[in-house]
Amino acid sequence: MSNYTYADGAIHNDHHKEMTINVSGKTDIAALMKAFMAEDAEVVEEVQEEMKEASSNPLEGIKTSPHKGGRKAEPLFQNDALTQEWATLFVEYLKLHKAFSTMIDTTKDNYVSKAFIVFYGIWKKKNLVASTPNGNACYQFLQEDCALQMKAEKKTYANHIRNMINGAYDLDLIDIESNVRTFLYTHKK
Image 1 (spheres, rainbow, N blue to C red):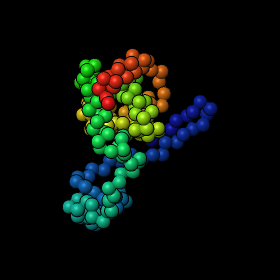
Image 2 (tube, rainbow, N blue to C red; image 1 turned 180 degrees about the vertical axis):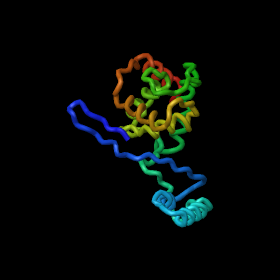
Image 3 (cartoon, rainbow, N blue to C red; image 1 turned 30 degrees about the vertical axis):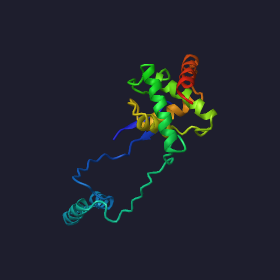
Image 4 (cartoon, one colour; image 1 turned 135 degrees about the vertical axis):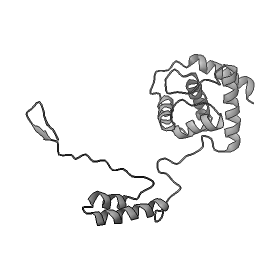
């Protein structure tokens, strides 16, 4: 235990205790708490027996839900046909510009992300996607529907792409916009 004195003279008394508990297998919290609070060998043996039982069926008595919380995963487009059509066009565009194998990351200069922003703007004008971007849906479209390689984790990239779409960065998209419009003019009905 140690104390810390702040600049203004106040003293912080460090009253925290440190303890290590070694547990093997799956254990429920009740058994851990009993082990933590146990004072005699008889109680410790009882707790160890409960821990063994808990490790044999760790989910007994626990209700599970398929929903993991957070925003529900939604597709980027309203139906599978639109998703497939635009995923194919987006991948073709990336291959034409030799960017299909580029790993997607959270830098503002990532070409694939910038191209996606331009496509998203077009989709938004055509009312094909929500006006408020869903970062998870964007991530899912890029990774699953377009089969692109992601360098960033889902949550990190979802926040990043949503910020990019919302204009959080000063991006130079003029050349990409021109390329995308020319591509769509020649490849789309």
